[in-house]
Image (tube, rainbow, N blue to C red; front, side, top):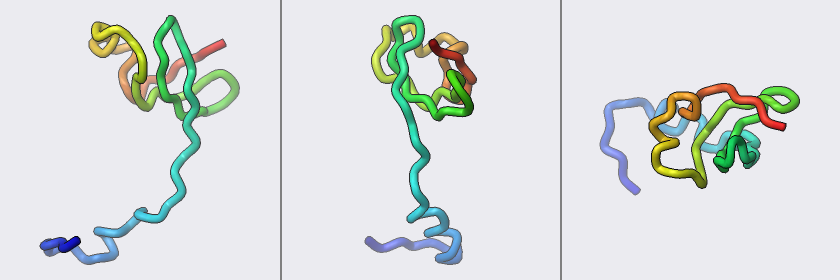
Length: 70
């Protein structure tokens, strides 16, 4: 791979080999989503995995929203 950039290589490769954060899959209100856990039964939505199309328009289920599950 060849990169043509004026950015220093330290910035280009920064975080390249960093360990990925642990994500869990939870089902909330019938929607399957990937969540980054915060504390017990709370987390930040990363992405929706299995849901009706209109759920993507609901701001309650947008990436970055904090949810609780049981």
